[in-house]
Length: 430
Image (cartoon, rainbow, N blue to C red; front, side):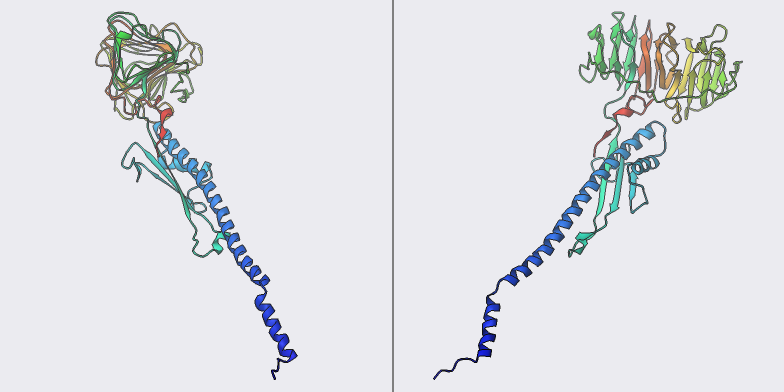
């Protein structure tokens, strides 16, 4: 006879069988484990998204800092590290705060432009904190980096910029303009007034037309005519402040820099110490800054150079000084390389209204001006035996006229030169 289990034992076995067959608790445990993992990955995804947004903002700051550093140094501003870190801080990335580092290199340390002395590299880096993702095994705090590289333009700057309309650039008689490595920009036309006048340049970008295309030689293709885009003033940011106390009559000899003269009539050989000279009006038969025949003007040291400002007196605020450099006179001047007038050898007061009398640069073949001639509302006339430059002469005026046997020669305009026309073309390359 078979004897079954006791009721108590049977109840225990039945409870064990029911526990064995019950799947509800297992699902809950598995779901709990899975939920923890999903929360961890969700938290990590959220933080990764935050890191990506941080990286995007950091990249914008690095790009802006690289471009600004190059622009500032081209315009005589602070050193690249000071400028770049200042711009980065304005965008929320202050060097040395909250683990942020802003490294500035010229030339870049890596990449396609490594070793290029004209390029500027800015690297912004910051270690990021961990929040929920720190609960996951193997996750470490990342360091986010952004890198921007800026270079000067590969296209040479314009060394002739005419801001006026109509025939704003004129080549008359036997005039010869040889513009090596640089271009011409104009809000008007290029007009030839003689069959023997010629212009050679890299390229042109003008709003009007060319009256005699056969007399224009361009080394970089046909150039652009009929461009409706307004020609901007590349020296619009330059400024000056006249000395107080009025002007001093010039009595010959070595002039004093940073002093205002009531006209300056130079009749002998004079050497200018480095600095800014303010010419505040006509004196006698001289209309402002006058250099007569067989006399010469040079700078004591070619670096850092001079700026000659043509402006008006407080007593006669509507009478402005002008330039009149006669034939056979020699002028050999280099622009200042820093300060608010940097890059400009001759700086016409922008407040002067348009006038009929041109700023005259006759000179002779040995006249050399390295830097800018700037008369925003006036006509600059090149005559005599011309003006040349061993580096880069940049003329910005309402109208530019080369007359008679006048010649205008430039060379090596791939260098910084006056720096006005090229600054807005600085580009990001990495």
